[in-house]
Image (cartoon, rainbow, N blue to C red; front, side, top):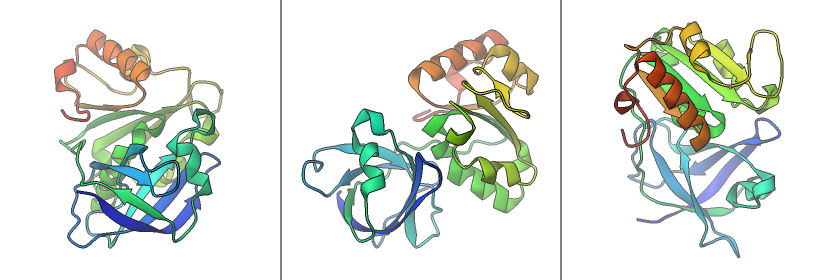
Length: 222
């Protein structure tokens, strides 16, 4: 079912990452980790929809999305910085959830962290974030989504991995077997995974080398 909603707020979190707050239709329910397809209700874009994860909580009276804009792609996300308060968008019913299945290690690449935002926020509020480790990989320090929020979170172990920057306190390069083992991943670890396909493929291979069953990975649809 299609729902027509208005944009209540838009805020730049970094040069590439934007927080959108939309009105919430009556009776529109979702669970943390779910996503919906979003369409811009403007000329030339009404046939272009993209899936975005809710980063608000089910009890909020608004819908929030945290979206990384890719200007070079000339797609929907490149339009995000041009949106204005009061503009209309279309959303579909929610689906495609990554669920919180218990303590473990989250491995996220770039915008792949967004399904875990509401899950981690819920755990931070409940005081159970210490049961999770977040390994967040991106191009450089400025690209990391909500890095300050994760850094401040009490008890949450956070590992930032920068592919194109050397920075004190961060890992450099990519998420490898050695990096995963260095941060406590064993064959018995529950691993959550979301990121660009090449990154997911490389991490899955590294996890298999450690002894993690790929069928047991917590990812969209699993």
